Length: 178
Image 1 (cartoon, one colour):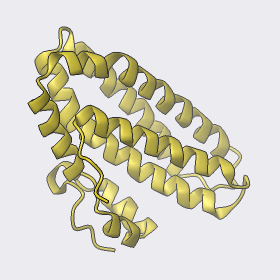
Image 2 (tube, helix red, strand yellow; image 1 turned 90 degrees about the horizontal axis):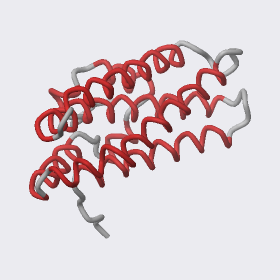
Image 3 (cartoon, helix red, strand yellow; image 1 turned 90 degrees about the vertical axis):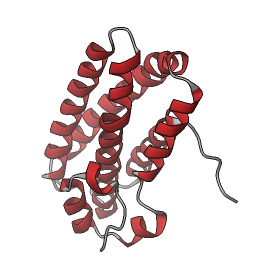
């Protein structure tokens, strides 16, 4: 059954639930298990994609329609930069590295705080400020930025790393070859 398509706020909240689920999957694995590394690769790819779509679609809408939208978007960018630093650090660590779990925990906390701010403060403001048609169009663009499920399964870890470095705004995550 086809899932109903949602507006940008629904789509980004669904991304948040997916990120929370990946964090949970990681926590269920034994501390030094290689599956944790594979799940972290998936987490990194999802976080990078999510960040790109927020910066491409959500931040311009914030700047355009919210009072103090520029300052709010700048704060979001600063949050993203902090997350990117943690992602880069985590990407360079093996699951057996003593800093792996600490860096992962710091990333989880930063993401949880960011999600809470967006869903409890920013999303209601955007819902009140943007017409439903604009929210729906932005949601459509966010969906286009997601890799298709078959493509996502086919992408190897090394390809994911290469894909993350591509200009995701240009290719919107489509037709990624393994």
